Length: 98
Picture 1 (cartoon, one colour):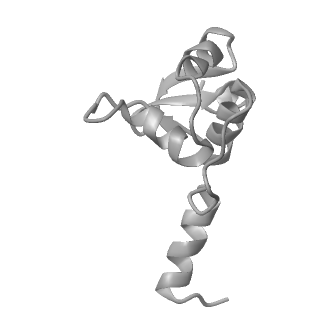
Picture 2 (picture 1 turned 30 degrees about the vertical axis):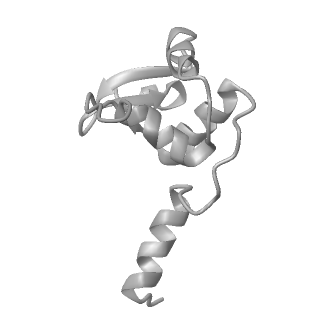
């Protein structure tokens, strides 16, 4: 299979959920689903408008209470790990990082 460069870019962006229009998140499960779709969510302290993880989630699911991310971590549905950078990772993937 051959793809043009633009097709490959579009495929990658679509897989990350960037082409779907943001919508109002209904629950913390929408935040978790977005992170599972991405695989990991980088924890970045850059904060010009808001911290990077919040902006990444907002770009995929729309407006949501930022506390949902911390709630998922506190509930054990996510864990923090130094993957390629500090990241939030779904707990189901913990076995791959032990």
